[in-house]
Image (cartoon, rainbow, N blue to C red; front, side):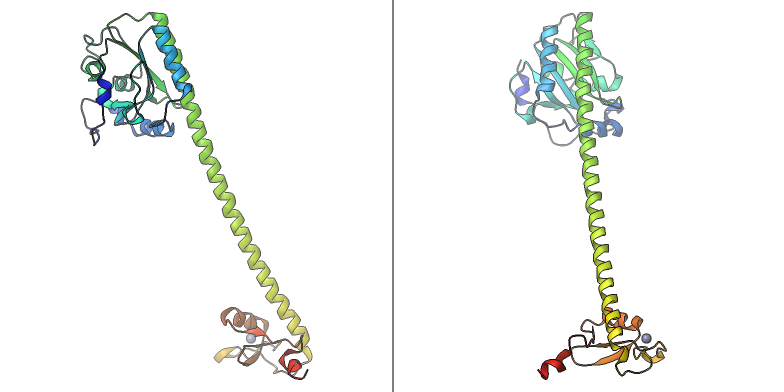
Length: 296
Ligand SMILES: [Zn+2]
């Protein structure tokens, strides 16, 4: 029976209240773990296909799967022994897949005659996939969540030998080790991205602070130079920039704007004016000014 070819996923998701599905399927911590593996909707990989090949070889079952089960579907990360399927058809609905039973019990389910077994006979995949005998073992993530299963499917009812079941447990552990590696990789990538963002922010802040310090130092230098130069120039006794309230600080610096307005100021008010009035500059005689140019 080749029922897999027309197993498209219908729109919508089963309700969390769906009484036919175990609550463990919808456990948010388990679902977060499933997504943290980064395995959903990914192409087949040799790391997992090697395990299903070995599972089929050892047990003599025709088909073997590694599934990753979220709250909606059982995605077949590896499926061997069936028809070649495109990525979007390598899955069935969660209630249709026997793997949801592994999540409910967190135990292996070894069924010698699936059509007669009350634990599994009503699961739609038994008819859809023509399952005669089914053996599945939970695959765990690093925190012990069941993220899916490693399972083998025989076309007819048959017995599973204890050493075959033991091998399935070992292979499920190997699949779990792969899952943990993927989770670690994801976590390392996240940490690296966070560190990089932090380093960039620190660099930006440092550059801004350096710019501000350089600008402040330049203003201070200019004020000192101007004050030194104007120490002998004629000027009023007090700062002229105190506004209505006046300023009793000594006049030390002459500032001006490009229209020729000028005032004598204390260093504090000079800095305030330079910061707040765009065209204001320190009127320094250092270079001789326009008068020197006119008289050249
Ligand atoms: Zn002043």
